[in-house]
Length: 567
Image (tube, rainbow, N blue to C red; front, side):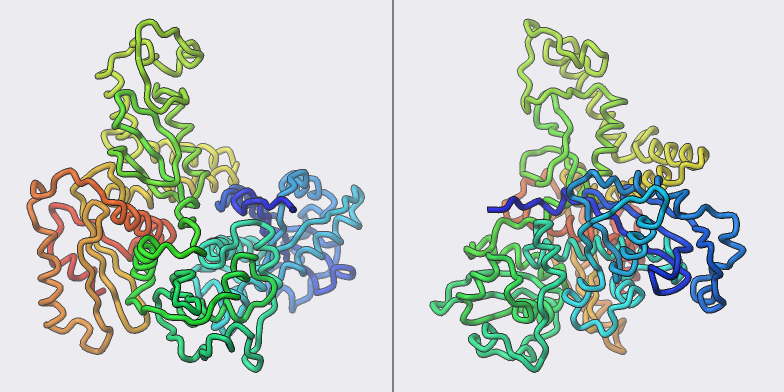
């Protein structure tokens, strides 16, 4: 059996090129941009104009904005080929070349290397975001880069410029990878590469599985919700959620032999389909989590989406806590911070803590201290004060742990945010813009997480939050305290969207926001509540728009909350 490689281990090189024409043989590149994605995050970037040694026509200049004068003093491809080779790092066996209509960019790059003086033969697997869009976004009329970007709410500063197009493509690829893993069971590189080429059934040919369940896709609503795949004996085989039920369900039947083995086996047993409509995608996620836990369908593996957004855990339930990266939160009294977009931000934060604080680094989860224990390497090199042999007292160590907590969340002076900001400014001052961009992304990720981490995780209790989720016709509001979902309320969008009766109902729903804080004691989460916390926090990790949630503080006015709900 062939070895499969986890999608998180792949390195994606996203590329876009601007050229003097359409032929990789007769025309030349005028600009190239490359963005590297590792651990699901943008980790590096390279871009430059190129002297094509060819005349740039007025048509091309009008399209791209690149003139003959712009490239006159720029390097030829042969002069930058070494930098491109170094950036891509062809020694990595899990390297994937990606782009929107990727064959165009790949052919130009490959041909350019072929004709360069230091000729280098490139041979990489390619992943096309345009092909993925055709399969993942079937109802989207145009699959152009700008159309897909608009669908995901991704802004693009300039059209037909290599770096801007590459950045947008990279962000789209990140979205697609999440969808492929969460909704299509594509957890391996091989699954994703195969998915881009799966056959799409036209509306004229009804797939066999769809004929068997005797259902028309027009019978499935285009609303968010949860669907249930059932056998002839009415056993629930699989439960899934969807932002658009028709799109998601039809994807099982538009595709044929290219499904994963698990999906093919499941479809062979499906005899009927049922679904529950919800008022938002977040409601669908929460309901899916509850239903899977209750019914335990045999084709549902453990929910995998949480492992792609790590937390930082500070295990204060132990006498001598340690700090680490985890993918699950537990009902154990520890501090959890997150979830972060990916591992790069977590690694950066943990490195800063390791360098600046003397928190223990040893592997043991619970430390049994004794004066008889000998000093370890970490003590000898000055990065730990050896709580293991009581060189530092429990209270002194607890003080150091509190400093780490304050450092992460930005309390009382120095913080990891300020450190990252200094590192970003330093890199920018040294004209190391790639490093500056990397630090900026880490800082943005951290700032986004910390804007709601006190609400979602058990790091600090007694915080409240309201989330709003919109569809075309509805707005659903989620009232959350300590990460626990207390209430939901749905507004039907209409001309009377802010009419008086809605305001009166919302006024009742906001009453809980003004309970005195001492009414809320340290909360112990049930298994179901923990699942909901994971769902909500993961949703916030993916939906980074701050306009979608508001944190309630002591001094916020009720009018501000009502305005947020209706805006």
